[in-house]
Image 1 (tube, rainbow, N blue to C red):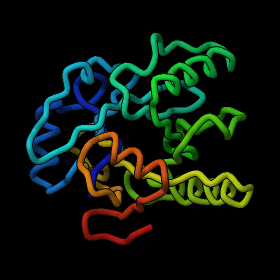
Image 2 (tube, rainbow, N blue to C red):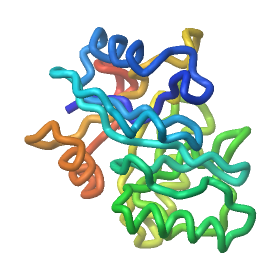
Image 3 (tube, rainbow, N blue to C red):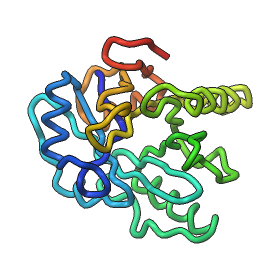
Length: 207
């Protein structure tokens, strides 16, 4: 199944409503999407159930020391505030107790890289964020370093789509997940096991 694991709606800083994003995804022919608004999971509490598109509950925990997507749980934390490393760990432990799948987003981005000295509290690495560029190449190398250390962490990709402007586009990149079920839990279980790869677009180069 093919989809986009990272986008934003009017519930945070996106241009389009959840319903508009659903229509855009359907027009592209995607099978699933995850709308991961910044520190706001209110939209997850009443997710629509379109017949031809799976919506994965998600929120992007946004901190000046790094961004992380929390997938699969409508309300993964009580508060997004973390003013210390201990508070960050407590937030992520709470999300994990609620069975969230945790992804490090754009770990080598120029403006909001992953700066925590911690390589154990996440399940995925978003190695491809939006258009391919040097920060993605650096993220791939960082991920390869984790593999070399014996940290067998799967990869993911997401457009980080906010609004209608170049060069960021919905569905670029696409994460392809090998699963026999369109249910959110089954998609995330397959992703957790590494049964996925990323492509530039629906027909573009593959990683």
